[in-house]
Length: 196
Image (cartoon, rainbow, N blue to C red; front, side):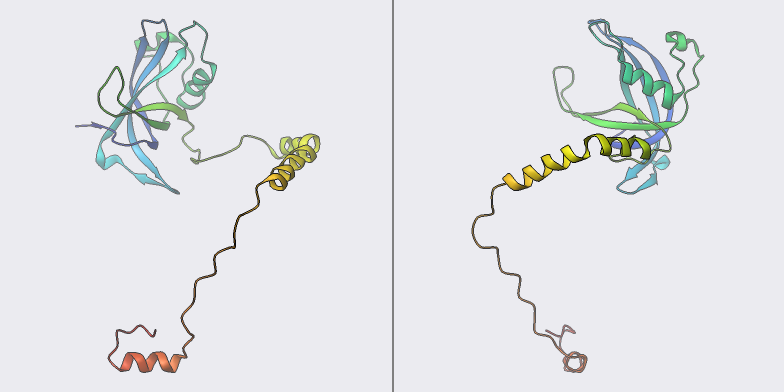
């Protein structure tokens, strides 16, 4: 039987249940439950199917002021295959596998315990971590237009940084060098095998 996820992080999997949720404020969310198949552990995907974990989240597509949350709608469309039709609860949406960013929700007025929920969707194949979205041509244009000014600001920051106070610490002392013959002799004398 699936259990709720017990940590924040980046996961990959599939949306297995969904529906529309409207708050008293008028804000509207796509409520999703997702099966978590893989977990991003520092630099690689780790198989998590054996843990049978799920996560849920409310992806707010209409804000309480009545305006659309364009970034969240775009993420649902790009990464989970939603066509923007709010009638998807009638079974017309078949979500694409995607990535889920799960965040920690500390205790608050609505729940007394720490919870973890889906806050964002990303493309299945995306490598988690800080990434940019600029092409090589766009980076060149940015460097040509603003590069000198950005470097000048960085130079001012370094120049105006406070000077370090006091004398820097001395480097740690290293053990005296010993020859390979001395090392073998120390080991043969019944020592602990450490030559110093």
